[in-house]
Length: 233
Image (tube, rainbow, N blue to C red; front, side, top):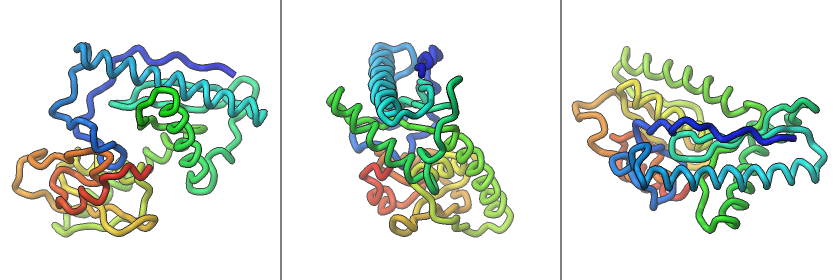
């Protein structure tokens, strides 16, 4: 088992504040430190530390369970990204993903708790196993693009199927990039994204104030933003 090196590239700054998985004390996009700044450098070191702690935890877990897998570390936007990937010794057991990614979600939460225990700070790291999230993200981008096309053609809002917090965030980001608005409706585990026609407002005039918090694009109603004030993922 081995741990891949942390990417040396500066993290790409998110165009918007992520919508589903942020703590209420996260700064919004307008206050994010620029890459290379003293503040940005300190944040990067903290994320690197999160990745290292997570890698140690996952390596120990895999060793105890006698499972194959290597650990890759990276930084994705404003969070650590950790992936358990196939190794030369063998493939990562897909049961670590589980049906609909439920085992992966539980493993991610355990890893976040391990990081918090070691650092004293709440972690928002993203965990992937065997490329599950990466593949699902690509699928969701296509789903979001189809919804965007439908809304632009019909001028009417479009409801998507229920999704997890991670999945909703991917859709919100893609909808915003497509120039439309979106918010979330319903309650877990049946919470879903609603894509709306573009308004006359300037994009970003109503930011998703506190990201883990707000499961919505910038023009989402304040009520929807308040509902997501606790990181559900």
